[in-house]
Amino acid sequence: MTVTAYTLAVVLNLFVLYMGVGFVLRPGPSAAGYGVPADPEGDASAYLTIKGLRDGAFGALGLALLAFVGAEAGAWFMLCVAVIPLFDTVIVLRHGGAKAVAFGIHFATAVVVLISAALLFAV
Image 1 (tube, one colour):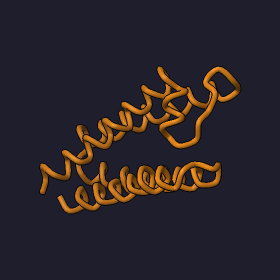
Image 2 (spheres, rainbow, N blue to C red):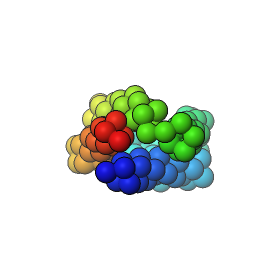
Image 3 (cartoon, one colour):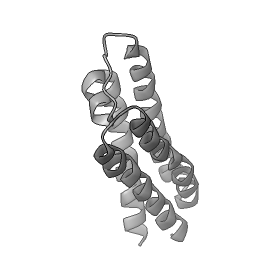
Image 4 (cartoon, rainbow, N blue to C red):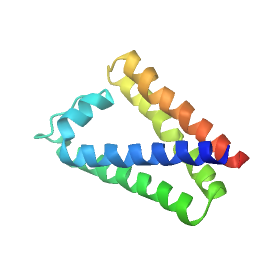
């Protein structure tokens, strides 16, 4: 179970780091993939960059906690950050995004992050 717990947590954190880089380098397509398209050349540009930097920092922090502190710290981190995809679900729905994206991507991500936290707590 230890290998599964760490593997899932590392993959999730690497994915968040990847998404952060995507929002910095390709803000328009990344925003569309998020479920709420935005014009990267307009007023949204700064906010998309901020989102990218914050996502990247969350991914790096999660990896650092797993590498240098251990499973329990990683579990608490995953438990705390699970609220982000839950709120992403609400944001997409409130702004006219597709329900498939809201639930199929964001809500499903929250569930997987919570499973990751549970696995890390069990290690």
